[in-house]
Length: 293
Image (cartoon, rainbow, N blue to C red; front, side, top):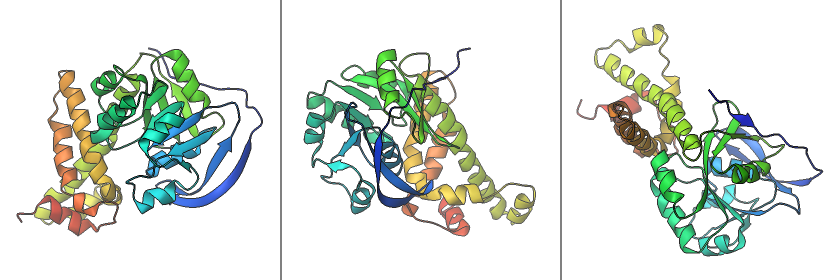
């Protein structure tokens, strides 16, 4: 079985200067704008929590489009150059990285393609491999998957030359660029496999607590080592996880695998959409799972 290849490079001297410190899912960090006159201009769609972190690691100038974006996004993007619109971003960028909610991934790619973009397009969203292949039909696509269980790893697949170009943007940074064998779709398949395993675990734990509470044995469940903290902490992200579980289910269905587990997880996470980006207490989350009780 082939193994991922970490792309390592000789590090050229570079300049960096600090810009505002941000608080995100990985704690407080200084966003860096790393400069090297030899590298490309990179368009970032969009600087959400993970997008801003990935963008901060790019070796080169990062562009973003503020039109229609929220104040929180503007704050995260303070270290990047605002070009206003997606049209202007496409016109000025030689490479575009897409990190957006999975349900709009193809809309974003279509908008970029409609502007005549002919550079490398890094499709780094949590979408099924089949959707990546569709995007590759009209863009020069590198398949990407961000997994951040411990370190932040950006897995890449596709044309070897294009993969190397993308990986070179992250040399000596907090984002580990890792090339996968297997061609286009391999990175997305890895994301589906890992995302399903990781997030369905949270959904199953929440379901276990809902069952236990209905019969007054949740404390005994906790004493058996089933920890509620995992899903309580992550409930604020459920609005993002639900569509990702739909993608996992579609991937399972395309492979002839049972798809009921990820679809059930998606339904469970949608019951927490009211807690978008906000903390919630255990009892409230369990109430939302059993609204009829």
